[in-house]
Length: 320
Ligand code: AVJ
Image 1 (tube, helix red, strand yellow):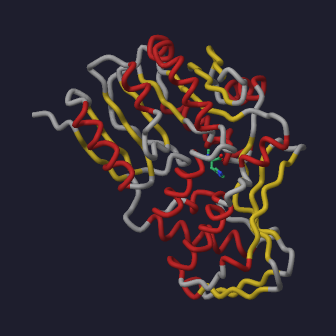
Image 2 (tube, rainbow, N blue to C red):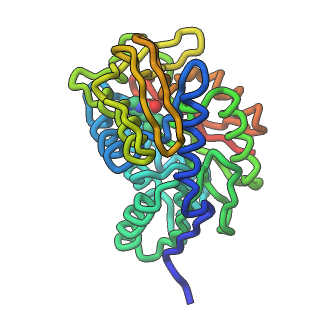
């Protein structure tokens, strides 16, 4: 008896709440204050991110889609994949281009922390392609993965440039944990945004319409709702800055005045001095040689490098 759709939870039901409390406590009691970008993405945050991907200024999504539209058949052939594993699958809209290029029989393993994102996307896919085996995995892909058994070769994909949200040491650990679940013949497809003119980068993270500003402040709304905090979203200004030394964009929230914020669920009071900045995201931008070296450090050999026509974004294919 075959079940085309299975869902496996590797996170305890309350993992999210516990992780949020730990991250907020750590991040807001340290110097400088920081919060990890994963907490942007509640329902409202995910909606705002979708809106960002449609902005004129935000090119990465369109650039990556352009590469996939042009190269999906080549990626499919090079990988020979019978299983597609997608880390941080979200809405799986771009993945569709890869799934459509891979022949039956095919197994799709979307991995995401959000159960609603997983089940929603998976059900639509199965309706359209009844032969597709879907085994959704609720997991935090920044932790060592425990993948369900699935036919090889497997193609692991990590799209969107999300690897840029990790600090260099975290990226090394992440790539090593991906390499650890790969077997000979498997491949990794990695999306990376590329270093380019500063004004283009800053505009992509500080759009005219203020959607990214709202997205950035949404992390405060999440903490207010989940931990009973009293952040006033208007008390903070959105800041996007290019760090030329590290080659990453930093998003920050700058206190407009001296502030005291209560976080009852943590028994915590946090003070901000006027002008103090809270870092909410880094989004690293890459060069070809750097990507190759980071893959190599994880034991992976880059075999292909594809960019969009304007050279803004890259997809790399790598093997063990
Ligand atoms: C979804 C992580 C790829 O870093 O560009 C968009 C998130 N942050 N605008 C990125 C984001 C601000 C995005 N990623």
